Amino acid sequence: MKKVFKLEDLDCANCAAKMERAIAKINGVTSANVSFMSQRLTIEADDARFDEIMKEVVKTCKKVEPDCRIIL
Image (cartoon, rainbow, N blue to C red; front, side, top):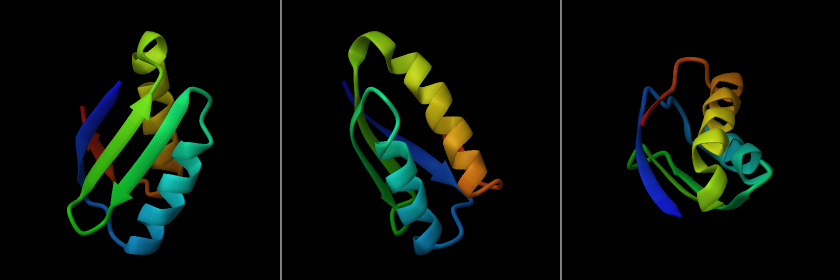
C-alpha cells in the first residue's frame, strides 16, 4: 500500500534525509520518501501491517525531529 502524508514543522532538508533513511529501515517498509520542499512523506509498506508500521514511523520521526508532526 502506498500513501502520502502531510508533514508539519519539518525544519530542514538534512532532518528530512535522516527521517527518510530511518523510515526505510523499518521492517515492512518497501520505500519511503520525505520531501522537505513539499513537506510530504510518501511511504509504501506491507498492507497487512500498515497501521502498526505507521506507529513505528511516527516514533522514528519524533526521534529525528521532535517538533515534526505527521498528519495521518
